[in-house]
Length: 249
Image (cartoon, rainbow, N blue to C red):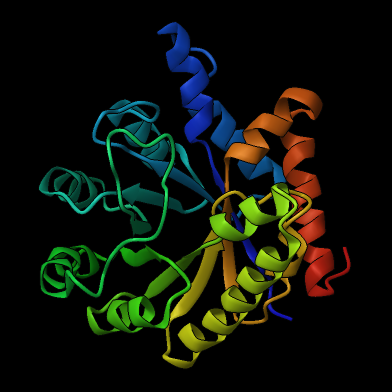
């Protein structure tokens, strides 16, 4: 089965740094360690309120990374201008509400097709791979395809939450939905990614989807790094992903 890429999201290294208002821990250092540990890319979400990643972080990542940067952003003029200035390898358009603790669901594409089509066109023209973060819903997948997205990233949060809460029938139903929508997106010619809330306990069934090309995982890895270190935490996630794909070291 084709290699499944791992994108490591470093947002919450910046969350810890910003809690004290200093310069430590440095998200760029975390990104370089993730590179060395086998990450295929680095993900960073520049939020409107700059609660974790900052403009300076994006500039530093753009200059220093050897692996691709996946720039998560809301569909605003400010973020579009920043993306067009830095031209990261990839941009992932996500929903964003100031009051949310983390991204709560997928982007509503079907009801905003015209605006989003015009929004992503300059990004694609600038050479960025454009991804849309959406729920595992055929209506949203079809809309993402119509507006010209190259990639969809399926929101795995409901599946992970159901597992954590012991709602195993709901978990299995969500997993089946994600599996079906991964295949559906692939059938439309879209590159299919997935992410949000994935842990060592939940990653393998998702990683086994043959149509998937990339997982983006962050908060769990940053948390696990407190106990075992960032490099071993990433290495274990990489091992579980490879095992699920039937890949031997």
